[in-house]
Length: 129
Figure (spheres, rainbow, N blue to C red):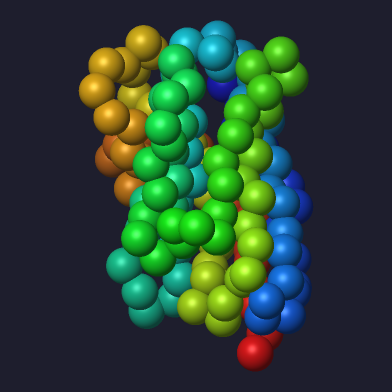
């Protein structure tokens, strides 16, 4: 049984930092691209960042480029999202997700459940101004 669990959310002031973690169990973590998408009330769901199973250059949404850094530790089955210079518009529920297919070629992009084999319950990030 696959489980995806996010942690690290919370309340932070604008300009602050947070690091999200995501552990995925019940699958060969190192074989899958992993990513984060977010959903804010009244806004469209957005693919935030994604990293391929083979590493390489990650994908970042333009809205977070230069501020967020995605990384993975295959030995710990853990995905991270370091979020710096946070803005109020980053306020959202953040979800960790697993790409649909292992060893997927091409770029990595996860915008929501339609692109995902599994995803977690989400962790809330609230950035105050």
